[in-house]
Image (cartoon, rainbow, N blue to C red; front, side, top):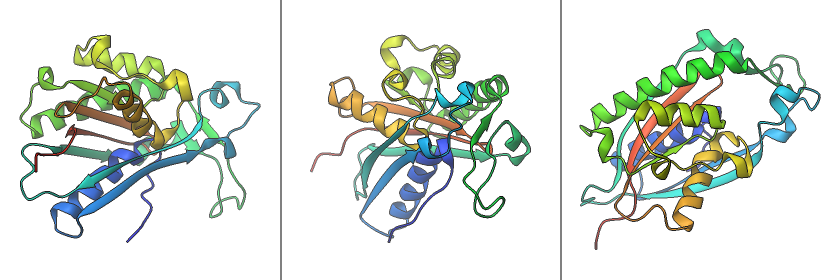
Length: 221
């Protein structure tokens, strides 16, 4: 089966949770979770406060069900949504409203405040769900929204630069694609290794937000 999960910048974390739940329920053996965005189609290029922040991209991970996971895989996830804040980050059009392609609209300062508050809270929730102290997290692999939010969460969690993957400067905010892109970069250059615990977190328009803890790699055969 194949289907789309729409949760904008938090889409990868949402899709990871859905795939993990389906595999755990025995609905399949493997899942391909893809985060892909083409923000260039919905940017207002005259609005310099938004158009310079976003990019196009795609990334993916494969999940595989194991009868003996040995502590590998998705350890815990937590997801949230609150439509009361839709007016601070949204697209002002679409087939069902204006009949035209809309553009991204954002109140950056308000988004920043909500991001730090909600991401720090959901990270506490997911660590509690996994019964894990933050000191056991090897890497924070955050949604690459902007450097202020990334470093704000880094400070909240008390992490050094050596434990945070930052790739936003290479591809901008690619929404649902940004976490798998950052993961690919850190695995590719050898920073992330088999058996390490990764923390994912993301927030997007709606507002929607979530976090996940994953032990990277696969159990021994």
